[in-house]
Length: 75
Image (cartoon, rainbow, N blue to C red; front, side, top):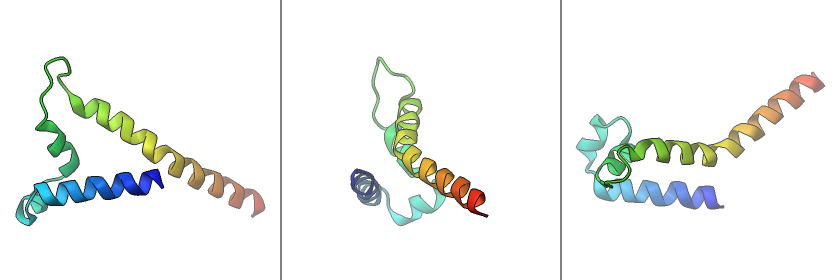
C-alpha cells in the first residue's frame, strides 16, 4: 500500500510540475525534479534518492526472484 501511494504521489507531483512537451524530452523526470532543491550540505541529492528508491523496489525484485526460483525448482 505504501509503494502504491508513493508511486501515485510522485506521479501526480511530476505531472503537475512539468508540461507535456517537457516530459517528452526529459529522461528521468523525478530526478530532474529533485535537482531543483538545493541543499548546501548535500551536493548530489540524486544519489540519496536513488538509493532510497532502491529500497522501495527491492521487495518487488525479491518476490519475483523467489517466484522464478520456485518455478524453476518445480519444473
